[in-house]
Amino acid sequence: MKKVLQCLHSNRESILSSLSKKNNSLIHGSEIAERFISGFTRVIQAEPIPLAVDPFIQIIFRLMDQNLLDLPQVVRLISTLRTVFFDIFHQHLPHETDGLQHLNFYLDDALEKTALKFDRHIKRQVIQMETSGKTTVNFTSKKKRGWLDLAGTRMCMLDISGGWLDLWRSISLFVGEDTAKRVFFEAGLAEIFSRTALKKGILNHTAESFKAAVDTYSEAGFGDFQIKALSFKKGYARITCPDTFEGWAFLK
Image 1 (cartoon, helix red, strand yellow):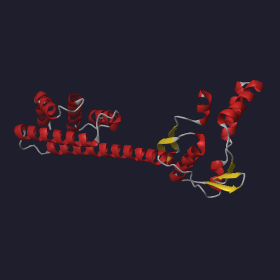
Image 2 (tube, rainbow, N blue to C red; image 1 turned 180 degrees about the vertical axis):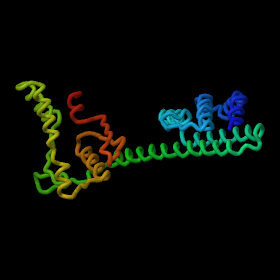
Image 3 (cartoon, rainbow, N blue to C red; image 1 turned 120 degrees about the horizontal axis):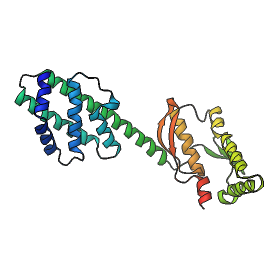
C-alpha cells in the first residue's frame, strides 16, 4: 500500500483541484475533499477510525445537521470522489487492486452511515408531524351533564388567567412565592391522568401511547406540546412547547 500513499501524496493538489471543479457548487467542497483524503489515508495505513473522529464522516454529519448538505448531495459527492480516484488509480497505478478495494469500502461505508443518519432524521420529522398535525382529543367523552371524562379522569374547564393565575397570586401573597412554587410543583407531580389511563387500559407502556398522551394533553388546552425526539425504550423524550398555559398566563 506504500505506492498508494505515495500516489496520494504526490497527486494531492491535482486531486483537490479536480474535486473542487466537480463540486464547485457544493458549500465547503474544498474542506470536504481535504477531510476525505485525510480519512482515506488513515484507511490505507490500516488505522482504525472510530465514527466519532472520522474526519470525512464528521464533516458530512455536521453539514447535514446545519442543513447545508442533504442525502442526494452526499450521493453525488461520493460518486464524484469515486470517479476522481478511479481516474488517479487508472493513470498512475493501473494494476492496483487493494487500493481500489479500500476506496470502495470507505466510500460505501460513508454512504451507509449517512443514509442511516438521514433515515433517523426523517423518522424524527415524522414523529413531529404526527404529533403536531392532529386536531382531535383521543380520549375525551362527556360522561353526563357536568362531568367531562378525559381518559378515565374527571376534568373541568378552568379559566387560566382568572382562575389558575389568581390562585397562584393568592398563595404567593399569603405564604410567599417559594411556597407557591412548591405547591404548584407538587400539584403537577400528583397528576393522575396518565396513571388512570394506564390502569384502565386506555393507554399502555408503548411509544404510541406516550405520543397519544402528549397529544391529548395538548388538545385539552395545556399548550402545543411537540415531541421533537423520542427513544421510548431508553426513557428519553425531548418535548417543546411555545405556548404552555402557565407561560401564557404570566405573559398575559
